[in-house]
Length: 214
Image 1 (cartoon, rainbow, N blue to C red):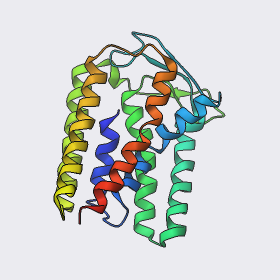
Image 2 (cartoon, one colour; image 1 turned 180 degrees about the vertical axis):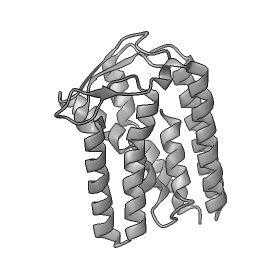
Image 3 (cartoon, rainbow, N blue to C red; image 1 turned 135 degrees about the horizontal axis):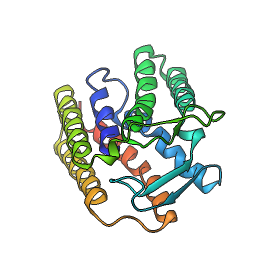
């Protein structure tokens, strides 16, 4: 998933308003933000193979340190502990743990069986929703719109920037999602890797939005 992860971040505000939207984006995408760094370091590997699944040509050969079930739990726990150490806010810490781990759950729904249970096991799992194009598109878009709606119920703009920064992000995410879905497949591994790293900009965008909404 792509916008599905951000949907969970938006929805988090309806549970606890204290963590910033940027922090929630950081949590839900933490695994995908670690992944390209580990790829660049040569620790994890992927290839581009058109037809690997109906919706994506990416073949995730090995990514147990960023995306195994065990490490998703570990990263979620570390994320929650760091947040708690800085905020002493228990509810927000628990929520952020859930948000980090939610990434693995959503990937489990969409990926083919390529998600390892741990870095020490070759057992892999995945429900292959990416092989059911229109079902995946409908589910992910619906989840995204629900997350956005929950966010709008939990917050309101305190100035014009609070409106336009939010609306422009929604439009941007939808455009990127449908371009990736219906556009030509990528051909360059480095381009995919650096594009994944660019998601740090979306985290910053979340902090910008939150500063202008209450």
